[in-house]
Amino acid sequence: MWNSEEYLKYSDAQSRAFEDLSARIGARNPRRVVDLGCGPGDLTAALARRWPQAQVTGIDSSPAMVAKAREHGVQAEIGDIREWNPSADTDVLLCHTAIHWVPEHPELMASWLHALPDGAWFGMCSPDDAGDGIHSVMEEVADRPHWRELISDCVLRLGEVMRPPDVYYDILEQQGFRPEVWQSRHWRCLHGKDALLHDLEAAPLRPIRARLDDEQWEAFRAEFAPLLRKAYPEHPDGTTRLSTRMLFVVGHRTQR
Image 1 (cartoon, one colour):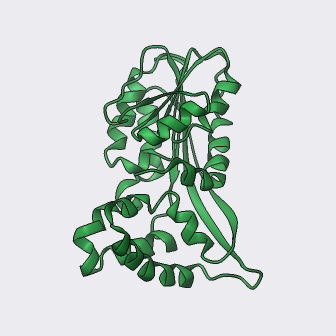
Image 2: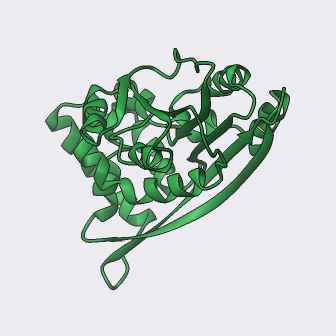
């Protein structure tokens, strides 16, 4: 499903969110650092540079992403985060822009936190802009009668998956972590004709693309692109401006 080269084209926004998240992790000498949903590993490699003494591991369900991560020098493993559990020496656990793909993630998050040792740090971030133009357009097209049965389940419906910020705060607190929860909005300026469409094709639209054959994909794009242009019109200078709201959740366990 995931093409690692295309995904890296989408990496500017990913990098900014990752830097904001990891900057709040105060671990000094962690034994093991795990990046759940590591993708192509370019950001996971930064963790290895920050903590060279640690065992840094990336986990991703995509063989293509794991292969690319290994090219970046990351010890990466194929795995489903639904089935993963932290070892007793996992002092830093990060889940960066991946947890929103798992509807049952609050329960998973609680089980991970429960298993982490004293002094451990946890951090996650996720898109948190349900109802914005992009998601509304994706849902509108995917829910049309001629697409519904084929791709409706491929659309990421943030409003149904993500919980209010206080839910994550409570989970951290209940598991003995000192919570820090915040939201931010990142603005980006994209260049070129249909730049936003091409940007989305690198990551959010990949599940839909994987479901459709070439003819169906072109038909979907023909319906999706005009609505996207209307929601995000090109400015006179040829740029398209995009803002994304992100939710950040960080916790530190001082003692049980």
